[in-house]
Image 1 (cartoon, rainbow, N blue to C red):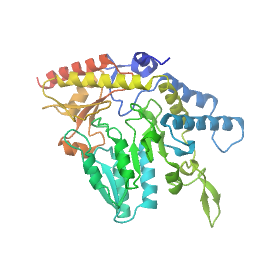
Image 2 (cartoon, rainbow, N blue to C red):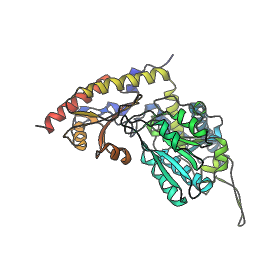
Image 3 (spheres, one colour):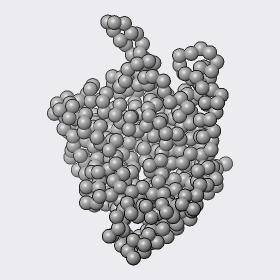
Image 4 (cartoon, rainbow, N blue to C red):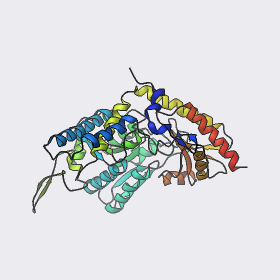
Length: 407
């Protein structure tokens, strides 16, 4: 029997906190989610009962720690439906995953005059690394714009693909607008030109279906801390054929096979990309987060969040002078808005005085803000533990802040 979603809030100790003498309303989940007690317990248990370096030792603690770390990798493999465990590379997060790929893919496959296509909806983490790589390699960085609804034009994308295209990088969900991009169709179109696709799943893997084989994604990246796990750990999934072809990103311990003054050869996957001592506790914590999410029916969870998002957007739309950004046919988890005549930062500060945590600013998406002709937005973002009461308090808080700021 699936866990009741409405009972989930009690599993997250920090959500009992009071902020500025108000019960916390946490709506900054796109930046990071809170952690259930089972994840916190997993971290404490590792450092209390299991702490040892992995893969290199044959004493009991080292063997047990290695097994716990590799068990976490197997959980990730099952969670995203990868074909092989060794296609799952642990990194520090989405940012490192993309940088690893931009560096290694660029070094191996990109020549002067080649082209990389990146959508205008990207977080800087999936934009800047490709831009810098193109500059290093003399390649052309091409941006796929979004339309007035905040959506990618597939016909325009199709027209951009050509024999010089080497890779497409696109997020599944925009962290600023919440647009759910048609990544399945993007992948299909790109594959018709034998072009691999990187899917940034940082804002989708905890909200939408996550099946890399059904998507046929070549690369798929995400962070633990946005899906109820610890910070400092993330995942780069890559199809075996691509990971085998790429050179290492970092060198040092664990990633080598033979080292002599004349020759260095590299370890097998996934270790070729995991130099040095990894974040063992955090990987185990990610595994605990996956176990926690596994208690819920994924379709019920998605419906809960979609209903909550629709409810919150309707409440905000009824507030005078409200601007809600984007109108995509499918939106996930993000409520992006401003009030005419009120600076987004001021709104965020006043909401905080009422215990309501939102994010304000550019959200690491300057190309989006430039296209919208704004300096920034207020972004409320939901997670499984949010409810209609949180949306009611957000709407009330915005109305109260408007009265204070326009007085």
